[in-house]
Length: 105
Image (cartoon, rainbow, N blue to C red; front, side, top):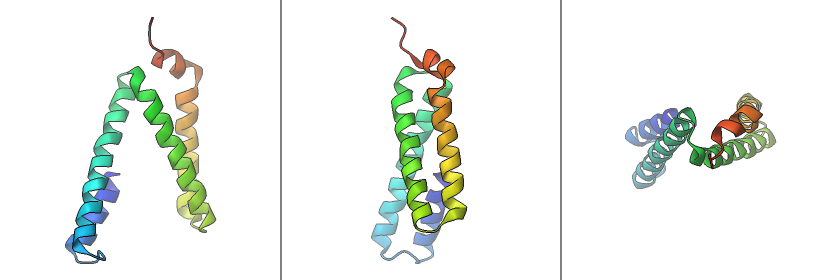
């Protein structure tokens, strides 16, 4: 997401954005999303139970985006997106992960 933010910022600064205001808004939203994803990743790394649901939802969204990329004949982006998202989802739903991320009662 940081790379996407950098590309968006570069396009806005170089004037390649359709409108400057939309380029700035897109860059800001991409930066906020990068911070949110970093927070989710930190939660998973610290084995916080709250982080499992947002992480699974991110993986499901990545699978949908991968399918849309394949539908648009963007195989070089769609196949890696699907493989990485599926691997992340399998990792999150593996029994050791479920056990570690369950709330202790």
